[in-house]
Amino acid sequence: INILAIESSCDETSASIISDGKILNNIVATQSVHEKYGGVVPELASRAHQQHLIPVIHEAIESSGLKKEDLSAVGFTRGPGLMGSLMVGVSFAKSFAYSLGIPLIDVNHMQAHILAHFIDDPKPSFPFICLTVSGGHTQLVLVKDYLEMEVIGETLDDAVGEAFDKTAKLLGLPYPGGPMIDKYAKEGNPGAYKFPLSEMPGLNYSFSGIKTAVLYFLRDQLKVNSSFIDENMVDICASVQHTLIKMLMQKLKRAAREYKVKDIAIAGGVSANSGLRSELGNLAKELSWKVYIPKFEYCTDNAAMIAMAAHYKYLKGEFCGLDVSPMAKMKLGK
Ligand code: ATP
Ligand code: FE
Ligand code: MG
Image 1 (tube, rainbow, N blue to C red):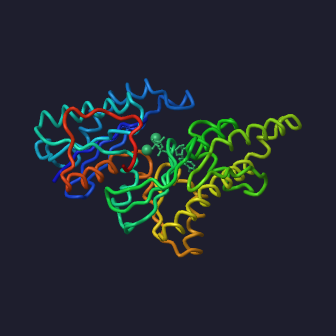
Image 2: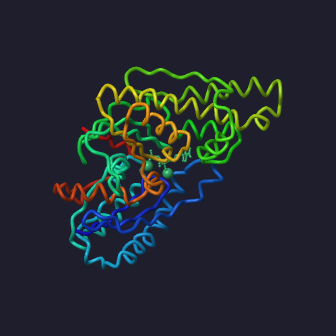
Image 3: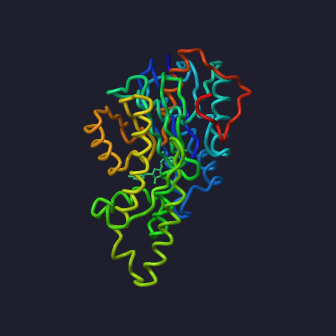
């Protein structure tokens, strides 16, 4: 079974080939047009997908050593994501599958982020809890099987990646600011400044309060000392990062306790954060968890994870028709 998978939900155009469950390649074209706008511009994203898609797919097929006639199915991201971006991938997948006379497999992007854990060893065992932390999502998911997942908690407003990026913007750092905060935080004191931890009911999160808290904090400090940010950058970054990680870990610990699960996975772009990784390492020792973090290449948006999801859906015969349409707000689970 050879499946071509396509990812185009946001600002990464990607294609991957999976052969009998083994990922052969993962070609990613990152869009740089958005940098100067400080965020993804949807209209520019869909145009860039149109430019990148065919070369990326061509490279994936070429480098796999297969011919397009060898393909058994085409998998693609149906949602969630930006409507215009999704549209490019979905339309291509449909026409390509139709022209080859092979089935189509629609994939949920958030489910795929979790299935990225099955690309390499070691693999988590079921049931496990996955904390998905990205620019658009923050979810606690109980993973019962490859295709059986339940969202047990999520953010009620901003995603944690957004909180990193928006705070970074207040500090005058370039987009995306998450990696910059991480870099400065390494040299700072995480206890230097205190920011409130928002307490949401159950296993839910809220990350919109922290950017307001940081905004007011900076405004007050800058009144007294106009170079406050420059002089204290590392301490501010360390304190903000510490607060965000503490919020993430509180609910993750509670979820693990409530569901009696010790296999813990993280997914999404924010799982690159070194503070988060080391805190998970500490908790693994303290609570005898087994912690799983995918390779960075498979944490951010990529088609290999879409291919993995398509593979499991192929095995269960879960295909979709040519009338399928993209779904910007596609939900995970039932
Ligand atoms: P989604 O997958 O929810 O649609 P997305 O595609 O924007 O959203 P990703 O590409 O998975 O999300 O992740 C991007 C986010 O990860 C950005 O918010 C970025 O700042 C953040 N990020 C990347 N590296 C780090 C890091 N080292 N520390 C903190 N945040 C980081
Ligand atoms: Fe993503
Ligand atoms: Mg992205």
